[in-house]
Amino acid sequence: MYGLVDASVGSFKGNATGVGALDRRITKADSGGMSTSHFGLRGREDLGGGVGVAFELSAFFRNDTGSAGRSDAIGPPVNVQTDPFWARASWVGISSQDWGQLRLGNAATQLFVNSITSNAFGDSTVFSPLNLVTHIGAQQAGGTSWANQLIYDSPNFSGVRFSVAHSFSEGRGANSSARVLYEPGPWTASLVWQAAKKDPLTFADGTTNNDMKTIMLGGSYDFGAAKVFAHVGRIQNDGTSAVPQDVAYRVAEVSVAVPVGSGRILAGYALRKTSDMPVPVPSTAAGGNIRRAVLTVAYDHQMSKRTDVYALVMSDRTKTLALPVPLSTVGASGVSAVVGIRHRF
Image (cartoon, rainbow, N blue to C red; front, top):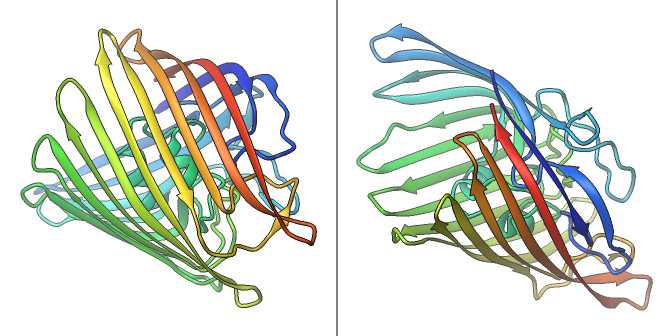
């Protein structure tokens, strides 16, 4: 059994889906700041000859309220349902040292894996600039994990690894993705492609059923005194058959992690923008269907092998094409300041 509990308190303006023009500042205790709180079970049976069978079952929870999942259900226009219990992971697979691993079930998408393993803020879906403009409240369909996946992960070929994944349609329209990673030494390079055509069966991401294609190029270099990350990408939103669209979003990110004593200084900036015409939304909606820019600066102090504390400031700026007619462009901005603690078990 394993897990992580993350708790924070601070002054927030806006939320992970993007600051809106009508948002007001609130002070709150929250869960899942630098990492989403979760627990799980995993194991592996050795069948001999370098072959084994592995499984993972993992669930999200909110330690501030004791509730399961990442969020409660939210009605229109967000249309978020609650998470299934094993929303984080529920898969079984067979692996070989020579041939790689084949998994079947619910698991993180290759796009999300690529993001969380190659930015200074890791898997944070509340404070990581890259994750906020690409996945959370982004113009992105399909969620951060897909159900009904068949995933192949290759072995390491002299620093090169790749994964391909397909989420079976079951009458909804299939999702597919592929990722290539090159790690020859202190630097890494990755390329990921994703095509999403259906609503996910994990719900709390707040995604849509738009037909969307995403490509992202990432890289990092460890200088010793600092590790630098960068990404550029494109999200193409073709809408639905009922409401077709042709909107391309460009994504760029740079972040850095600087070791300082028993801690790290973290900083990151990410931008998502479009020059096309997105579908307008009510002025009360979360911001950012034209532009969103997020800047986060943090200090993360390692108290022990399993426990760290953090303090950070995050700036979120958005531009949204808003209803009613005549349409208007609404700008919004907010600064949040937070302290928190994270413990792994």
